[in-house]
Image (cartoon, rainbow, N blue to C red; front, side, top):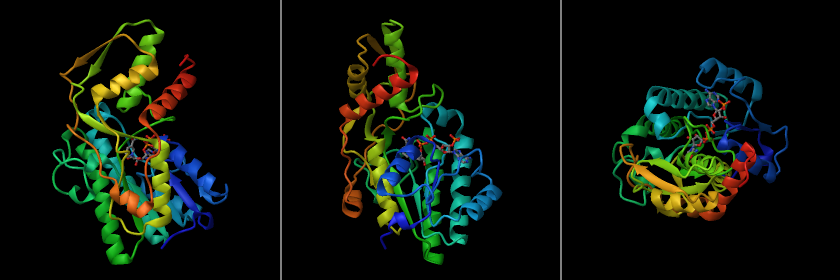
Length: 318
Ligand SMILES: NC(=O)c1ccc[n+]([C@@H]2O[C@H](COP(=O)([O-])OP(=O)(O)OC[C@H]3O[C@@H](n4cnc5c(N)ncnc54)[C@H](OP(=O)(O)O)[C@@H]3O)[C@@H](O)[C@H]2O)c1
């Protein structure tokens, strides 16, 4: 059943985060009013705490939930805090899904991750391969927590008729990304490194890993459009991949980024650090079929926009 979100009370968890800000913007463009957009903040409700989640549902009375709140980070953060990443993502999803069921929410969108796929999975990953093996070790606690919630949604559909949608975006990038040194993903980490090297006239930078792993990157606004379409059109938690189809090695990415950041110094690779999953990209055929969705932002344009946004934030010239 399709939902017209302008007639719903739509709660977006994690709305102040990277993806959340873009999803909220699209919902506003769809015509949702301030009154029908419910944007609970972490400081008001800790979603790992069941009582807070109960209170949130009692106060906000949402009819649709787009669940974006999560503990997210790059390889470093996943490796140093695996327990927190597993616990927080499981707990948030568990309490939220259960309360959504109790409060007869019409639809819940769970945003999963490419990190749930098996470490050695033939590319492009198709949704039917999700359960074919253990994820890459460094992000398995996060990936499995996210994947377990798909089973919960599927069992709630079968037992209670609970309606949900699950999307699995690939690695995202764009304005409002997390540029924190401790927890950022690869693109913001590299932008920060290059922009700061350039502005301090530092000629050499070191990059972690061999640069040989392949990745697919999706511009965050494209992902947000896919997430909103899932809320409108999908009532079954069979996962739907969201990828851009643009696949490149980290070495190639660094080349494109150096151009966008106007960094022309020397780059050395420190292969004593892990590469993460060797190959990663998604088959997004189901997204095209079910959501009429395709990524529309080129990597070059998306990176330029991201670099421009970051430079504005830190007050440095692009
Ligand atoms: N970024 C990516 O490349 C990527 C790729 C695939 C999938 N995803 C998925 O997309 C979703 C959004 O990710 P993101 O990159 O936007 O993450 P993000 O920028 O780190 O935002 C996460 C949000 O979750 C909130 N949050 C964290 N812990 C919470 C808690 N205990 N209670 C309530 N709120 C809490 C945060 O609020 P505070 O800031 O106030 O703590 C923040 O608003 C996640 O489900 C993630 O798994 C992201």
